[in-house]
Image (cartoon, rainbow, N blue to C red):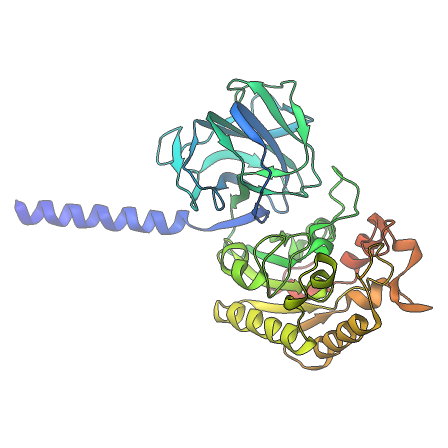
Amino acid sequence: MASIAVAGILWTAGITADQGHREDRWLATWATSPQPDSSPIQITGQTLRQIVHTSVGGARVRVRFSNAYGTTDLVIASAHVALSAGDASIHPGTDRVLRFGGSPTIMVPAGGVVVSDAVTLDVPALADLAVSLYVADDVAATTHHEAGLQTNYISSPGDFTVATTFAGTPFQSYLFLTGVEVRSSDDGRAVVALGDSLTEGFGSTPDTNQRWTNLLADRLQSRRSTSHVAVLNAGVGGNRILHDLVGTSALTRLDRDVLVQTGAKYLIVVQGNVDMHLPDLAGIPTQNVTAAQIIQGHQQIIRRARAMGMRVYGGTLNPVDGFPFPGSWTPAMEQKRQAVNQWIRTSAAYDAVIDFDAVLRDPAQPSRLRPEYDSGDHVHPNDLGYRALANAIDLSLFREDDKDD
């Protein structure tokens, strides 16, 4: 009898393990990169309702929260996900309680990350989800993504996670929320875009999802052969490859923001301009770097991503002449940019090259942005410019099957 009981336990364990393996076919559909906040929003027993725009869809969903830059534990007292109905409203009947190991509450340790249990919810591609989070304690939101370009809401004191709507104070960053995943088909995979403010989408119209990453997702969804490919934005404004300051450096955050993204198969790297321009602008000349050092940073990103089985594509650096801050551009900096771009184009280090510089530069003044793509600061594109970047990406880079368009 004992041997039969043991055999039964082993058989049941085998079934459970098999089911767990099948349930692990998940794909990130949205992400943002956490940053430290030295002047954080203070939350005092309030509810956050934050809106995310999906890339791919699915019938089940789970949500990722981060306390990466917290110095104390974060206690999530209640969390929900629903289809957004605009502003701080949700569609009735779509609200789902998020649980963590079966519990509606969880403690996120300082520096930690948690992922919710899965809930059944029909999540469309290119849709808006509302993630509601109630923090009962007094806490400083030291983990955020500053330039969310999306209006989110913080309530008056109280738990409003189940409310269809509430009168919240708007803000445009993301607090604690870093990812949304959906149950994926077996061939689902994700593109991760690693970069600075160009990838973040700075200069695009808030609340309209006009970042080049969103517009790439639109294009991928328009074709059956690529509709299973998600796009994740790991851009951080002011971010550098080699040094911290405005967020953690790309080499330091690569594992967290790129390599562990669920289903990540492709990486697009568009980074290096800020390494050249920020040191003199911020008064830290000891952090000036050469073009060769920036190239070494790219090589390290490529090597580490390929070790995880990813294909890695290099985006050339956009023109920045005309940025209206003293010391933000010099002819010497332009020479560095050209040297890095030449290496990206000709070294064959990347699996493919996406020539963003060729799309954005003014033919009459190649160090400057085309006037029709200028958001106003002579560096960041407007919505039209971001669309041109998305349209310049060859979708065959992400197609690995024989599906018909």
